[in-house]
Length: 195
Image (tube, rainbow, N blue to C red; front, side):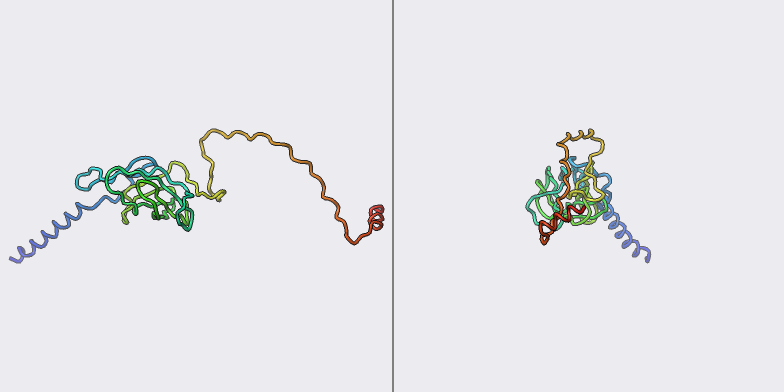
């Protein structure tokens, strides 16, 4: 009799745990990393059919009039189907530093206030895990010229043409001799004659 009373609660607990495990969303975004410009879909967990498809077309420094503290970045996003949820977008640096979206909307431009490392990707994160990720195939500029450790040179491109020779440098003329304002012309002639 004691075994029957214990079996029922254990069975209910096992079913509840099994149902919870079946509704967990996969934690890996490694399967969903795409280069900028390629569409990525969020799928319905029940049917596996796409619910909404986002395409992030790039991430660049922005000069738009959006309030920010650091360097403003923008990403152009298109949407196919579903209702977009823009607060889940982040710009992310290779160091892992995240910059949550501060403005804009999808479809359209999203804005990020970058106050640290230069971002190289845009992620769609539900607060626990990355669901979608777009990365740049080439380095992204910080928007600041001559930043140490940052190259603006595109590797593998055609060699740059040598600049045309400009006009010759002007002849160097020595600076005029300083004149003592308290010296009379006679004193100056005597000093120059004594050389």
